[in-house]
Image 1 (cartoon, rainbow, N blue to C red):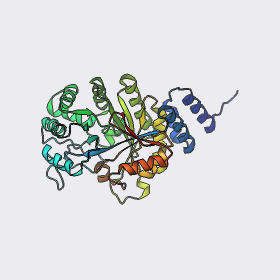
Image 2 (cartoon, rainbow, N blue to C red):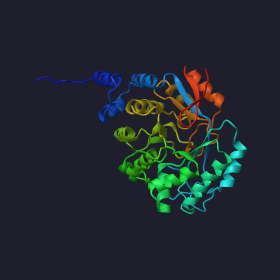
Image 3 (cartoon, rainbow, N blue to C red):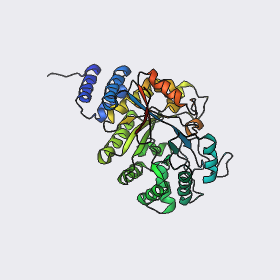
Length: 367
């Protein structure tokens, strides 16, 4: 009897052949890629895929992160941003207050407001609608990238409206796209253990499906590096891939590296550089139907972001101005970055910086 022994080298070769022939990778393929210690080969394969999809173009946007409220009814185990009503540091800004903040930091190059916040049950759904309306009236040329799928589910619960009705109200107020947050890990078992007492897996996916049906193109994330298994990460990617097959509504996939609650946490409490780079590369290989994989410098740092451009990433996010959620959870990176630094970072990786709008239309090429 012949026993066929597949060596790791042979197994990787089989996966490489599938990728090069445009065949879709399986759950088992994804798990194997996480288990191999040959990071450079995984990265090189992801780089081939990315060059095929995007050439040497790397995209960024001039954007600002805005947070209307940090009051939240959810108590997710990984979040250090949320507050209860009445806590020290808890806030809920009105439209005019947010406009005052924006005007202090705004410059004419800003093309996008990235808006997320707490699930504040002490204000009605209309508050969230009016917040967008106030921004859109004052800054009509800026795209409103607002709210996570979990926030949309929350709005549906407090208003009694369907996802479609909630989204339509927000679109009428100026919403241009949804943010990708609230996905965490798309596993109900994980969500129970991590006390993710907000939209479940099916609700997260259903909100994005509804948004795509209404003509919105959206973003999606994966928050990795806590208790989830490699298999759960791959299953997460496959669920996103399946929805993308149906709707083609996702523009970008954003792997988010979990930050420890304490900024002084040692390196063993953080994801390793190996894990971060491997996750970006595997995302590129698994998500064959999504155009861009984003390297989020807020979580992995600017230098690792630069290296990731040789391992499957084609987007370095944006200037941000002042990020708060990851920094509340212990991120050690800058809260924002200048356009000049982003251009330098991309060029240093031998790539072409492309300033874009929210929808990946080219604004300017920096040769």
